[in-house]
Length: 275
Image (cartoon, rainbow, N blue to C red; front, top):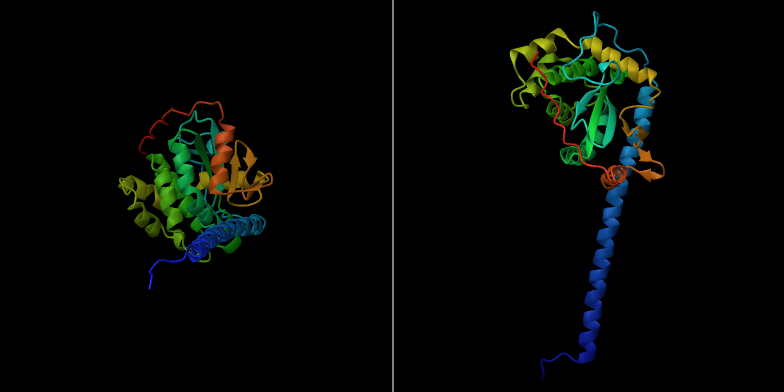
């Protein structure tokens, strides 16, 4: 008996195998689309939550007193901007955030690597602004305390890594864990060289509390819809830009389109002096 497969049967089997591979490819693309849509859906829902958060609890924490002590290296109008990246980068991403805001953490976790990549390539600089709307909505002082600690980190040129640590370790929204200075100092231990006596004193004394409240007032009076607010060269891109939903791919595309024909930034921000 011959072991050879008749030509007709072989062709049928090959066609069946090819069809199965095509089906697998379609299923993989379908799953990718579902996952991508789910991420976009979460961010879109998050934007709605942020919108609600911005319009409830308008009364912020009024406990800070005294003059607003500006963090070292702060720039912009009223010195309320904490800049990250080359000052001559061709595009600017302006972000308003609250360290207790879960939507902000979702935004950061989804886009942190992409933003860092664009910053390191000199394509983008980021202007961070801090708000404390969750304290006003739910009570507590975690937004204020965390923002003050972030400003203390800015004093020694370590705002960006500490900012990332805070969002990676954000407690559940109702949990005001960031109101404890001890927790903020503990997290500073994850940033090399940040946990110093000077930093601890700045955190515990609330050195930048009045500055944080000044920043929050600017947010509330700025007509923004919620946190996070993300503006690329002054145009809102969260949860979408025009008719396009924000995504990693679209963010890169929008920045590169805006930068077409422009040189990457090379100016190195001056190191902030120790407080």
